[in-house]
Image (cartoon, rainbow, N blue to C red; front, side, top):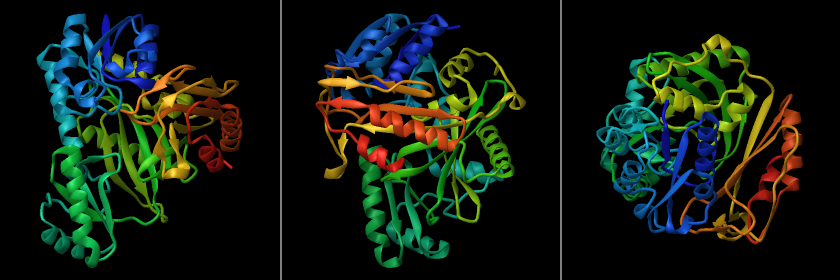
Length: 427
């Protein structure tokens, strides 16, 4: 087992990983920017190293500085959390070259699954259902239009290296295709330095269903059930729950088996997510694979009792999975609401600032993952999510009732949040 792990992240996921390390008796190293000098993760870790200025490019995205911190602190491994460098194949490869374990899949797997077109091709070869679409990269709008006509409108134009809703546009006719293609491609170039696009059939009003999988280095793969992430804003998830009310036991078992087959086709190891679109006729299609821990991983932890962060660490250390598929049981119902420092009445504008007073909910079945505290100054440089509230109940109604009660208890003075917006969703 590792003696020391460096966490290449910040905020609540860094705190979450530090706590898992502490429970396992592993020393933790936090890295931080100048804006995060007094952040919670720097105070909870056994060691903390400043790696640069506030801008992500100068700190949390600076591979050389993070690796230098890992080497200087003599860390055995690096956990990337989610976001930042968590799905960066180059960073995973650099870790290997420095003899530091990257807690996640190999660089080759990250690269193949991170390219959505290649991921689609891998899944098609494994006979995993995919949304009808292009099989080769698309670079020019004119050629894309020709393919879109063959697929049939409406279509979704997507960046091959995209994520988080960037580089995505819906085209409903030939008349708006060129403009949408060029805008999506420009977003891809700006956000991912890649102009590779692909086109697929747009599924009207789908559900977003993702299956959590765990895979070790010995080809053992298990599914830990699904999460329904259909409540989104601008392709960003707002509320997640498990299990999904849209699946019956037969479909749940079938999709779980397909998710395991998909992970095996990718030769996957570590925690990962197979994401599907489910249409109104209960047809499901592979959408993408996330090669990291998800923001909403706590929902699955609540209904399975399995600590996904610890399992990631065990797998990276070379251990076999501690359970088989027959040992996985879904109990009760869990719902997560993401709390963001943003103003819903002003187009969800980020609202950084100082938290003057803070009260967080508790009680039976309530879990809060956060890194904020009274007096904390939320910097303007990073994602606006400041907390995740998870409610667990004996069934969905019970979980919703607990979530509504928990949201009603939260008091965050000094900044504007989306708490009321989330409360309205739960009504």
